[in-house]
Every structure is written in C-alpha cells, then in structure tokens.
Image (cartoon, rainbow, N blue to C red; front, side):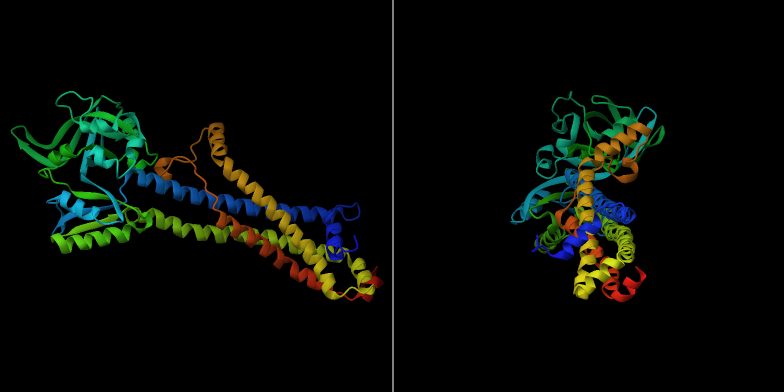
Length: 429
C-alpha cells in the first residue's frame, strides 16, 4: 500500500463521488461522457466513409475492367484492327493476367411507353469472366445466355440492370427495343435504327450508374449493331496490382504504339471514376478535422472540471505542501486525475464506436422502417446500403488524439495547483 504513488491514490479518491464533492464528481462524469461521445462519433463517421469507399471500389470493379485500351483514329474513336494481337501482346507481360474484347456505344432502350438512355456493351461471356465478376451479380436469368444458350433461333439476348428492368416493367423473357444513334431513311420517313432483343438476365450491382444505365449484349451482336465489321472497340485488362492499373495500362499502350503503330486511349478504373474517389479523398480530412474540434470541446470540459477541483481542494493542497510535497507532486496529482478522465472517456468511446460500427446497418434499416423513409437512396449516394470499415491504424490515431488532448487539458489547472501558496490557502480555510 505504501509503495503505491500517493499522487495516483489521491487522484483516484478525487474521482470517486462523496457527499461533500458529489457535484465535482458529476462534472467529472460529464467530461468523461463528452470524451466518450466525441471519440465514438469520430470512429463511426470515419468507418462509414471508409466502408463507402471500399464498397464503392468493390462494386465498380465487379462491373468494370481494371483497365482498358480503346482504339482511336484522329480525334474520334475507331475499332481496333486486330484486338487478338494486341491482347496477346498485353498478356505477354507479367503484370497483366487476362484480356477480353468489348464493343461499346450509346443507345436507348424502350418497352411499352418507356424509353431510357443506356450504355451498350458487347462482351464475350467466356472471356469476360476473367475480367469482371458481373456474372456473379446476375440475380435472374443467366449471364451465359449472351452466348446464345436457352434462346430460340433468331432471338438476340440482352442482360440489363434491376433498376432499368423495373422502370421498363420487364422481366426475363420479355422483349425490349434497342434504338441506336443512326438514322435510316425509308419511304415512310427517317427512323432511328432499332433492334428487338429478349431479356435473358437481370443483374444487380447496387449502384444506379450500372443498374439503370448499363446493358450487355453479345460481342458479335454489338459488332453488328455498331457496324464495326467484327472488330472490337477496345480490350479490357485485368492486372495483377490493382492500384498500379494506371501505370500498367499506360506502359502497355505506349509499348503497343511503338510495336504496332496507330494510337490507343488508355483508361483505368480509378481514373474513370476519379471524381467520386477524389471527393472522398477531400472529404475525409475535412470531416476528421471538424469532428476533432468536437473532441477538443470535450477536452475543454476537463479543463473546467480540474479548475473546479483545484478550487475545492485548496485546503488539501496546502496540507500536502506543508507535509513536504514538492510542486511537481501536486502537479502530478491533477495530471493523473485529468488523464484518468481522458483514458476512461477514450476507452468508453472506443467500445461504443466499435459497437455502433458493427450494428450501424441494422440500426439504419430499423430507422427507415419506423419512419418510412429512405436514408440511403442509390440515385443520390451511388450505393443503396450502408457499409462500414473501422481501420485499426485510423482508430489508433483517434484514440491517441483523444489521449493527447486530455493530457494537454490537464497542464494548466495542474500548474495552477502546484503554484498555489499553502499559507494563503490555509488562512482562507
């Protein structure tokens, strides 16, 4: 018992509620609660942003290729003369794992009285499996139907998103009409080129950009529709290092130009959606700073709490000084007390924050069902459900910041206590 530092014993005693100092203990509890809530809020908000970024990246990569090389002639896009040779050239590199051709173009799709603009992508279903995992997102029908499986002779298959199917009011097996940006002049007048297709599958990514704006047809049918003569608009690449996709596709494109001549437009998943990821990158530090100010306000509560404790314990401080305690010992008592408030608040915030992160999606779903509102509209927020990811390094920084602010908040009140003249305090007592 005698070996325990008396500064720690006295600080712990000041934290416990007694009838004479119940108000001081209540203020200490409020300071702890403020630190707990500020730490929990910061952990939850950063986890939501991280989860949104990770889920967005995962869904984009399930639909889009890591990188693409598109043919170009002059200032306009042009089909590749030989996509297979270009694909084999890219596959010869160790950092390229798979290639697949595609034909891409704009169009409008209609059924009944609805007509919506879409992006049409023609793919080879077998080769596309090595590029993206969109086939895993098909919830009705079959992705392999793009190869002609299960359809009657003469039917052209199309795979569309769930949101698009709902707006058009169609299901698997229903016909739709695809309109192309090309005018045909007949005796009856000028009409856009069109083609009847059969819905062979419906996919659901959870992003409005794809579920409403993307349709898939077979590579050969897309080449016929856009008159490419069987040639591809470009090739998709799957690379070994996802975050090196930009560098790899630029290297492949540059080497291909030197080898085959012509020109290519290199593109990758991060550049294609750079506006989304750039906005997340800018938002994260801003939110961290703003919410850290809330934590700083909680730390100011510790300052006010300790100042009140110092005033309440003037007699105790004077007695300790007369018994031989050095100013640094008095300072350590209140530093320990304020640090304990910060540590308890930080640990409570860590536990509360991680608990909320683990159960946030069910909580949001419960709120939506109770109040009949849609907090996460996919049309507004890109994805329609809430994903969270509490990263250990970021959580550790938040906890370290809370502890640092708590310790800093103790210094001035503790210094004032250590400088207090014992004789004047005893006279007042």
